[in-house]
Image (tube, helix red, strand yellow):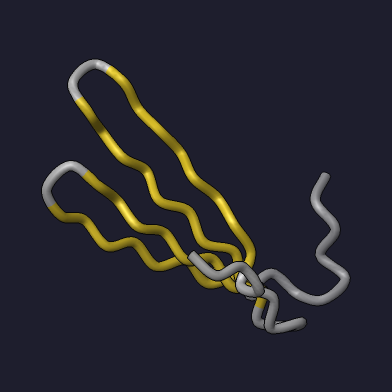
Length: 57
């Protein structure tokens, strides 16, 4: 069972779709921590690149 100590509305997720890529941003609203992921579709391969908010591209 999930830990619901801090309530159930602790995360926000945004997704941006375009062409062959999906950009995802997830944010823990309690701590402010953000995690980003880019999902890239190229021919028959799928690449997932994930990084936290402190990462610079």
